[in-house]
Image 1 (cartoon, rainbow, N blue to C red):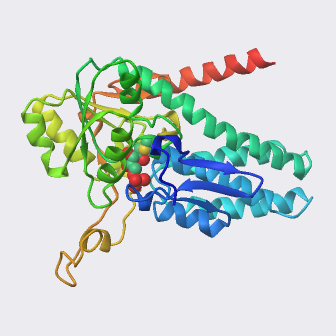
Image 2 (cartoon, rainbow, N blue to C red; image 1 turned 120 degrees about the horizontal axis):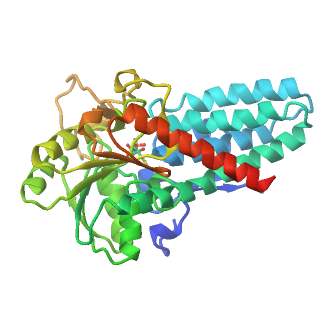
Image 3 (tube, rainbow, N blue to C red; image 1 turned 180 degrees about the vertical axis):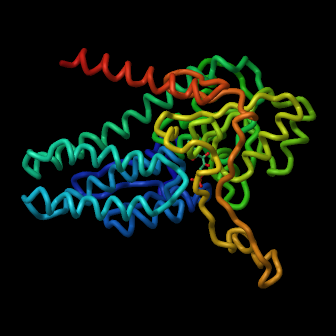
Length: 369
Ligand code: MRU
């Protein structure tokens, strides 16, 4: 158990290459205990993602990238075909750990591209390149979140009240988080935001994680139950809703933690704008609308037993426990990416964001060569 440092001083996820391990903060133990654990085997990595020991779309992507690198590193062959077959098998396994956050398959596909592009190279070199790519995905997350923070901050004024749902914070990413990035940058610059964190039933990511990390950072945060967002908005305390996402479809429909769509509907009622913080890694132009997003279903016990001393539901009651819901794009005032803010009509603006990204990447490549 480590309790001496502030939660903000620990990496959510990091690579310990020497010991062939991924090191994560076990988020199921927060806020009571800051416990770091090592993941080595494919099953340990799969379970850590499935059990939400590491969670949040960007952090899942980074974990998958480190994971597939370590699993590839352990493949004992010099034959490309044999190496690739084993790589593809492990990639598919990790990809099955959670279905909704597209960052998981995004990171794994990016790693696979490295293997496919280096077909003619010795296996040892491919392994080296895989490590470089995984570390780049990790570092990129910091830059991306910071850029989202800068764009997000342009939507806010000093003293604003901000409501957030679930945890799209540092604990869901590498640093800054996505929805919390404007809050942290604002904090550094004296904006004096007042944040309302929904507790986020049933797994309480808002209570256990968001309020924990914001409090540790000195942000003015108030914890509310999920059914209180209407009350705080009616009181006039909220100027903007700022949340993360697990997958944004091409038309702007957005899957995020269950309850987000309710917050968005309430916000519409009170004229409060809803902004989605979305790295381009979470935008999936291949999914046309929210109807095609696969929503993870989780165990009934998360609703009936978890956190309670005794069961809080009658034995045998039917339970519906989807982990995410889809917020209709018409309820979203803006999607804040690292390349700018997309607005309605999203089908066009999101495409433009990707064009900007492509241009920027080309420019960087030209600059390097
Ligand atoms: O089930 P979780 O805790 O992984 O859900 C996380 C969320 O819904 C976050 O809002 C989303 O992944 C964005 S994280 C920057």
